[in-house]
Image 1: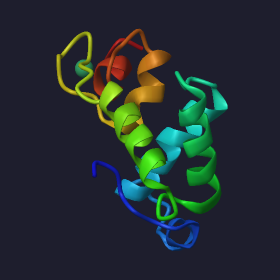
Image 2: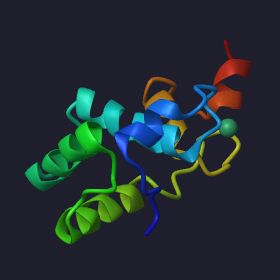
Image 3: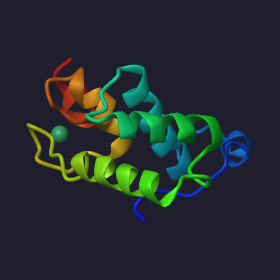
Image 4: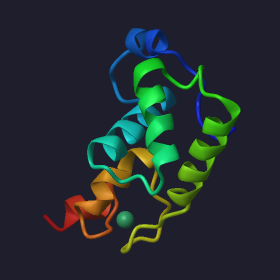
Length: 108
Ligand SMILES: [Zn+2]
Protein backbone atom coordinates (compact mmCIF):
# COMPACT_ATOMS: atom_id res chain seq x y z
CA UNK A 1 0.00 0.00 0.00
CA UNK A 2 1.43 3.37 -0.93
CA UNK A 3 -0.82 5.60 1.12
CA UNK A 4 -1.31 5.99 4.89
CA UNK A 5 -4.20 4.23 6.65
CA UNK A 6 -6.13 6.59 8.90
CA UNK A 7 -9.56 7.64 10.12
CA UNK A 8 -10.95 11.18 10.13
CA UNK A 9 -10.44 11.13 13.88
CA UNK A 10 -6.72 10.40 13.34
CA UNK A 11 -6.57 13.31 10.93
CA UNK A 12 -8.33 15.69 13.31
CA UNK A 13 -6.06 14.87 16.23
CA UNK A 14 -2.82 15.41 14.30
CA UNK A 15 -0.77 18.54 14.83
CA UNK A 16 -1.56 20.82 11.88
CA UNK A 17 2.00 21.66 10.97
CA UNK A 18 2.09 20.08 7.54
CA UNK A 19 4.64 17.47 8.62
CA UNK A 20 2.34 14.46 8.62
CA UNK A 21 2.13 11.97 5.80
CA UNK A 22 -1.59 11.59 6.58
CA UNK A 23 -2.27 15.28 6.27
CA UNK A 24 -0.21 15.47 3.09
CA UNK A 25 -2.12 12.61 1.52
CA UNK A 26 -5.52 13.89 2.63
CA UNK A 27 -4.82 17.38 1.26
CA UNK A 28 -3.68 15.87 -2.03
CA UNK A 29 -6.98 13.98 -2.38
CA UNK A 30 -9.02 17.00 -1.26
CA UNK A 31 -7.30 19.18 -3.84
CA UNK A 32 -7.92 16.74 -6.70
CA UNK A 33 -11.54 16.43 -5.59
CA UNK A 34 -12.07 20.18 -5.38
CA UNK A 35 -10.60 20.73 -8.85
CA UNK A 36 -12.37 17.65 -10.31
CA UNK A 37 -9.14 16.15 -11.60
CA UNK A 38 -10.12 12.51 -11.37
CA UNK A 39 -9.87 10.45 -14.52
CA UNK A 40 -12.59 7.93 -13.60
CA UNK A 41 -15.87 7.99 -11.64
CA UNK A 42 -14.43 5.22 -9.45
CA UNK A 43 -11.68 7.61 -8.32
CA UNK A 44 -14.23 10.22 -7.44
CA UNK A 45 -16.20 7.72 -5.40
CA UNK A 46 -13.13 6.47 -3.52
CA UNK A 47 -12.04 10.05 -2.87
CA UNK A 48 -15.44 10.91 -1.40
CA UNK A 49 -15.08 8.05 1.03
CA UNK A 50 -11.58 9.17 1.99
CA UNK A 51 -12.72 12.75 2.55
CA UNK A 52 -15.59 11.56 4.74
CA UNK A 53 -13.96 8.67 6.61
CA UNK A 54 -10.20 8.56 5.93
CA UNK A 55 -8.65 5.60 4.15
CA UNK A 56 -9.38 2.97 6.80
CA UNK A 57 -12.81 2.06 5.39
CA UNK A 58 -11.86 1.76 1.71
CA UNK A 59 -12.93 -1.45 0.03
CA UNK A 60 -10.24 -3.45 -1.75
CA UNK A 61 -11.53 -2.17 -5.12
CA UNK A 62 -11.36 1.40 -3.91
CA UNK A 63 -7.93 0.79 -2.49
CA UNK A 64 -6.68 -0.40 -5.89
CA UNK A 65 -8.26 2.63 -7.53
CA UNK A 66 -6.41 4.97 -5.17
CA UNK A 67 -3.12 3.11 -5.63
CA UNK A 68 -3.42 3.58 -9.40
CA UNK A 69 -4.27 7.25 -8.90
CA UNK A 70 -1.21 7.79 -6.72
CA UNK A 71 1.08 6.05 -9.18
CA UNK A 72 0.00 8.52 -11.88
CA UNK A 73 1.20 11.34 -9.65
CA UNK A 74 4.38 9.64 -8.45
CA UNK A 75 7.74 10.26 -10.10
CA UNK A 76 6.79 13.63 -11.57
CA UNK A 77 9.89 15.82 -11.79
CA UNK A 78 10.37 19.55 -11.49
CA UNK A 79 10.90 21.18 -14.89
CA UNK A 80 13.92 23.06 -13.63
CA UNK A 81 15.86 21.05 -11.05
CA UNK A 82 14.59 17.60 -12.01
CA UNK A 83 13.89 16.57 -8.42
CA UNK A 84 10.88 14.37 -7.83
CA UNK A 85 7.91 16.36 -6.60
CA UNK A 86 6.04 15.08 -3.52
CA UNK A 87 2.25 14.62 -3.51
CA UNK A 88 1.79 17.72 -1.38
CA UNK A 89 3.46 19.79 -4.10
CA UNK A 90 1.36 18.47 -6.99
CA UNK A 91 -1.28 21.21 -6.64
CA UNK A 92 1.50 23.81 -6.54
CA UNK A 93 3.15 22.34 -9.61
CA UNK A 94 0.14 22.98 -11.77
CA UNK A 95 0.04 26.66 -10.82
CA UNK A 96 3.76 27.08 -11.17
CA UNK A 97 4.68 26.06 -14.72
CA UNK A 98 5.84 22.66 -13.51
CA UNK A 99 8.34 24.04 -11.01
CA UNK A 100 8.80 22.66 -7.52
CA UNK A 101 8.39 24.73 -4.35
CA UNK A 102 12.02 25.88 -4.37
CA UNK A 103 12.43 26.66 -8.05
CA UNK A 104 9.04 28.36 -8.16
CA UNK A 105 10.07 30.70 -5.38
CA UNK A 106 13.41 31.61 -6.94
CA UNK A 107 11.86 33.01 -10.07
CA UNK A 108 9.30 35.20 -8.28
ZN1 LIG B 1 12.81 22.44 -8.82
